[in-house]
Image (cartoon, one colour):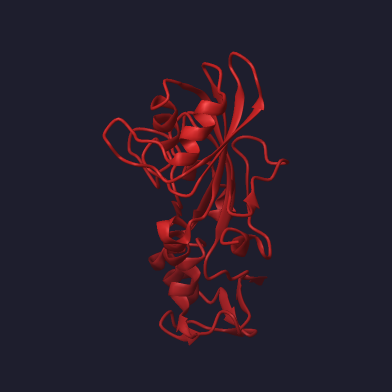
Length: 237
């Protein structure tokens, strides 16, 4: 679909709209090898070759980024007083409208998806889709068959909210066991509140996967990468 040339450049994080107009008027932008000096001229970025100072533009209508979130960061687009997950992105990934699709608590680590595709985020977060989010947690007390049964039945939170049935597995039994939890909703502090309903406290929490999309084990905390072919659709499998 054809769009204004200045809008195409600004949508890719190359420059602001005004800066893009200045670059175009200065003759630094070509479309299919021809210099284009009119910012209002239109081109189809998926069909044309657009270049800036001789360097071809790698056009992406939307961007999808996997981040291994460390503790201590807010999972929001921006905050005037604190560092957010967006601040971890390298310049090549930056563009207007980026936001984390689904939040994690400040002290929770693991898989976060960052995108500028609102429709993708809406579908991923919709309770109707029943997309499984898988977490690992360390708990402050033993977890046994009773807790597993209560999670499977759907726990009731302190405010009376009834959670959907969840899968609870004990991976490493101990006085501070490592457990795995699968839920299909994303209420505020849900995992912590679910364990609170069975008199347990979460000491550490990490999101491992969303749908069939698993956190890349090669990503160190604070690192990110773009999703590859098929990974976006894996979220909905």
